[in-house]
Length: 436
Image (cartoon, rainbow, N blue to C red; front, side):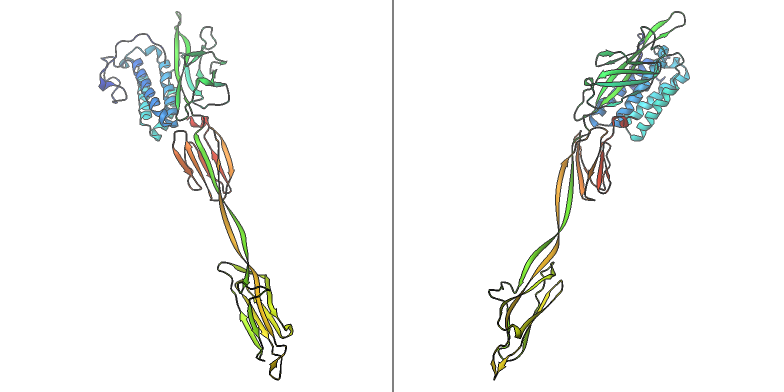
C-alpha cells in the first residue's frame, strides 16, 4: 500500500463498515463520503481475515485468490495515490467504480465459493489492467511464487512483473522486505524485478498452510517542477506449503498365482503288493470277471497316464488278467479269471488280488498382499506396477484427512491417482499449478 499523509477522521458507524454490510460508498463520512485510503485499508483488513482463517483449512484456491485481490488493492493504492486523503465523493466516477469493484472482489473472496473465487481472480487481473497508471506510479501485474514448499535450495527466487519506471534511478531502487529484513534486487528492469530470499524465511508447518507477507517498496517521483519522492508499497502474499501434501501414502497390491495340486491315490485304500486289494478267482471251475470303478475326489481330475495296476497276488498269470479304462473322473478296472480244472478239481485256475494307483490333480489359486510405503513431494509423479483391479492406495493428507483410492475412486485436489491397468500413476500438484 502507498504511504499517505494523515487523513481526516473517518466514519466509525458500524452500519458503514465495508463488506460486513454492503452500502453505497458515499453512505457515510459526511458530504465527502468515506476516505479513499481508509476504504482500501479496510479492504486489506478483510483480506487479512480471510487469509488467517483459510490457512488452517488448507484451501489453496481461496489463498491464491486472496493474493490476487490483495495485489489489486495495492495497485489501486498506487494508481490513486494523489486521492487517498480525499472522500469517495470527491473522486471521479472511474475511480469510484474501481473501488466498488474491489469491494465486490473481496465479497467474492469472503464467500469462498469456487465460482466466486474464479470470478474474483479474473476480476482482479482485469481491474489491474484497467487502472489509470498514466502518472508513472509503480504497478505490479503478477508475481511468483505464490505458493512455496520447503526444498533443497538455500534461496527462493522471487520474480515480480509490472511497471517500475524509476527502478534505475539513484535512490529509487525497489526493495523487498520479508520478516523484517530488506533485500535489494538481483534483477531490476522497468518491467521485472527479482530478489533472492533465504528459503528458511518461509518456514513451513507440517499440517497446514502458512502465509508470509512480503512488502515491495518502490519509491517514485511526482511533480513536474518541484519533485517529491513517494514510497509506493505493495503487499504480496506467499503461501508456504507443508513439505509434502501427504503424511503417509501406502500402496497395497494383491497378487494372484495359479498352480496345480497333485496327490497319489490307491484303490482300494491301503492295498499294496504286500496285501489287500480286490480279489477274484475261478476255483469253482467257472470263468469270472470283477469290475471296480474308483472315482476322482470332488474337484480333482485323474491323470490318465499315471494309472498303474498293482498285484498283491497273481498265482496263475496265464489264467487271469486285468483291463483298465480311464477318464478324468474315474478309473474302471475289470479282472478276468479263467477256470483250469481236471475232473472238477481246479488245477491252475485264475487267482488274482489286485489294486490300482493313480495321480489326481486340481488347479489352485493363491493370493498374497504386499504393502509398499511411498514418498511424494509437491509436483512429483510415480508409476507403480499393480495387479489389474486388485490394488488400493491409502493416504493421509498433511491436514490429517484420510483418503482411500482404488480403480474407481481417484479424485482429490492434492493427490491424483490414475488407474492404467497394470500400473497406477500417482501424482501431486506442483506449487505453480496451485496458483491461479
